[in-house]
Length: 479
Figure 1 (tube, one colour):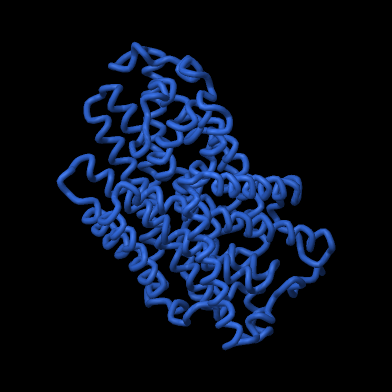
Figure 2 (figure 1 turned 135 degrees about the vertical axis):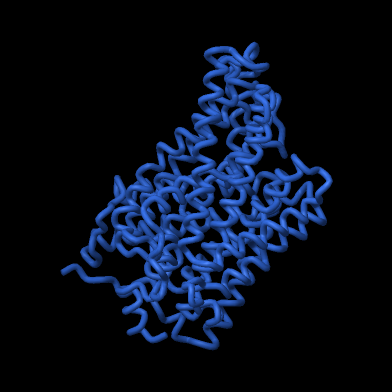
């Protein structure tokens, strides 16, 4: 690609040319809401509660504040230039082509392994009803069905994701209402022991120490993966200037209700010592409440949450591969759209690799979820770091008068981006300290070597790739 074409791509969003703007306001809003409610909350919270006790609520709240800083930084970039390959595009523009290449491929990896995690979780939930069905069989069936959904059109994807998210939102609000009813009216089998004092009566708020609570942050951050998916929808949203700010600004309320509120109620109804890893705290709590079919209903909801996230993963991998192909950083076949305007080749390759999750469910069903979530978290942290660093560079360019200001500026300028960046660095050190999560850093090292080799091959075949962008990108002049 010549430098002229690069400039044109930045001005017009060329990598998104040909996409159908088929995601309406209600769909983007629900994708944003659904991105904040996933298997990390419904299933991963069990292990986190067992480690941190009631303080896990504070950990989710702390991480939620940082996630809001990240999303406001992303929002400012999105309204400066809304493109589907947002993270990679901004890294490419403000940090150079190598960082765009690494970010695009790493975000793709994040969703591939997240898809594995969601397939694993969905298979576990099916096992709740049908213990005779092997986990790998359920995972394979879900993989094939969701692949078909993503091949049809972006409108079908949006509609399926809308209803997946609607089920999650309605159910979790219902859970909170029922839990409050148990606490205030004392009905059900759990009524006698349900009390707000459960939050501090069994070893205190930090029963295992502050250190143990902080060590849960890597698992907590996994729960927030997918909130940035709104950025990937930018190139296919009907009115990004209106829908994206609204979706981002409502994030704090979603965190307060769906994470802090839900966990406050759950841990008040059932004391924290009863929860364990590998079990959904929501299923356990409502099973104890004793409402007929409640545990089965909650299990259906968390199954929906897992499928929703996997569905989103297939969507985003195809778009990210197309962005890479449009910048000559991936095989050109990934850049082609079908007659239905979907990047089918990229989706198909990603789905095939998600099939590794099916193999993991066959070989190590008891460890599959832990392995893939730790790798996904590492990839997600890199993506968030690139968003923050790109935002810091963008704000510097705006302050210097080299780039127009966004219509959706982040409060505090780049200050909170620096705060969030330091927080993510701290979480990375915690991952390195945790022997159970450390596997993801080994995978990350191997991934870095693979990307380095890939970049060297690209440069040797097309030297112009390395010359694009860079430390001093061609920024749009003010006026």
